[in-house]
Image (cartoon, rainbow, N blue to C red; front, side, top):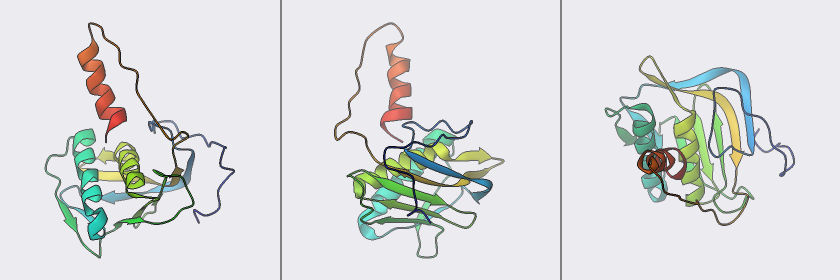
Length: 171
């Protein structure tokens, strides 16, 4: 159950090979197992008010994993489930639970679902034409209410800013 978790200020290490930025406060990997889908059709179960946010996952997966053929459909029988629910977290907080049969994405609010999308897009791997997520539980929330980025100039600025936008600022 995702309800049992260490103290709010504690951090768990994330396994090598999963460089998530920003690093989630709680990352609990399973000893083994993955959830895999055919990227031809990303089926998501999302209510009307969060469907647009669920569609943003598709854009992140396309960008991170070079999968332009991915299509989106909203279906009640889907195995990726989105919802907003009070998690007793600050605004932008979220929980992700990946099991071998489904993925549940719960946001404290719509902004939390957007932050979860960034994590899901980074966590996925393209293995032999299948999108694969490791079985795990993730719980995260912002440490501060306001975040910013200090931008600087230089000869290599375009490549740096492009990479920062793709990897950090948006999924």
